[in-house]
Length: 248
Image 1 (tube, one colour):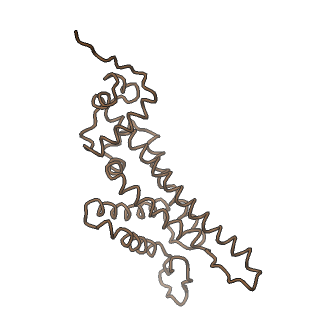
Image 2 (cartoon, rainbow, N blue to C red):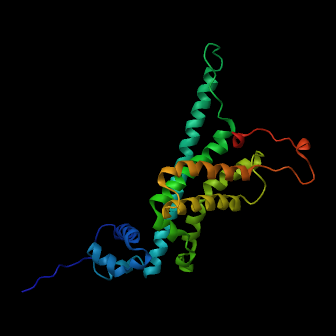
Image 3 (cartoon, helix red, strand yellow):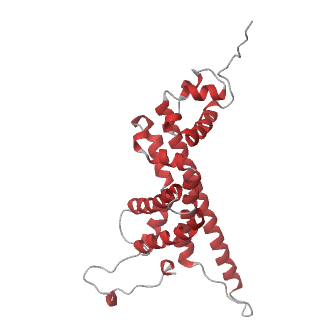
């Protein structure tokens, strides 16, 4: 007599478990290794159970990409929140102690707290996410994997992922610290530079031990590129450059 295990659809939060297992499979076997039947077998549910959440493999891939963008957005938002909190705590302390002539004045974070510091924190968070999740990031930005069926969810998640650098650049433009232009395009240029560095790290072209040095150099060049330029036909003497956080 043979016995077979009954596999029930009711399996806790099946959608979340499917996505978690799918991401593990993506890391191990790439996109070609993904299939709803394989996931069902790995998790221990009926072959039909995953289709209640994902119509087909493409829907699963789209959901993975959306989840990836959401996690990236959360990581970037957290990094700038921590950076700004630290900078303004220092500013508050400096202000509180400024009246005491017997104590040395603390440095005013100034523009660094508003733009350069948060952008550096963003860059570090992006590179960490990229190097820790290379297969997922590749899927997120491979448009051939993002079908029209993904609809507004994909567009919203992708926009949220770059919302923080867009907001920082927009605010810096208003203060005259960044060149004029579409903030979203400028933010995507920033992302492209970091994505290129992440690719080099993933391929071994840049050694992990040199990651911090390369990140500093890459960010320095990008930030210099964001600096305002003299207006055409006007020399430096008619448009003197003031020192900003980008110069430090």
